Image: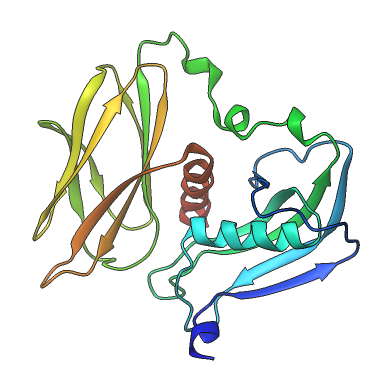
Length: 230
């Protein structure tokens, strides 16, 4: 009971079911701003929320739970219709609503293609999409460094896209009561999503930097912008 009470609350509404998919089969994720594919069958809807005691509800974890629900009814894609990121004074969980879909010719769609930015090819620069969703340490701000240069001042519910014209191996780093470093190999013509957050520290808190998969990062980055503009 204690374990289940800490899990995010999942509710589904099913209109049609097929044979369940094997756990090894991938489920495509379409973000809120992605166009829903044509000739798709909607099998139902799902909602993943917060019980008030939920843990393990990062965006990646929530999407994995959504994929499991889709596989159970034979769905091979999910279209997110609503995404509420963590907030400073509210839930610490990502919460989503989504449609469970079945696409007949699933191999015609590529997550990589949905995440790529063809306009960057041959551009002579790379893009760093840096963001910090709401969460712990709301009042703590810190400078984000790339090598010897400060490239941004990170605060809660913040995002910025930074153009980089020098490639090669470098280091992103921040410092509060401790210093956190993130090695990054920048290749011109590519884009990278960097998630910033705060972990537990002795006095101030420990900054966390992560390179995020482009599909996940793109959706989280846009969600921060939507929240900020409300």
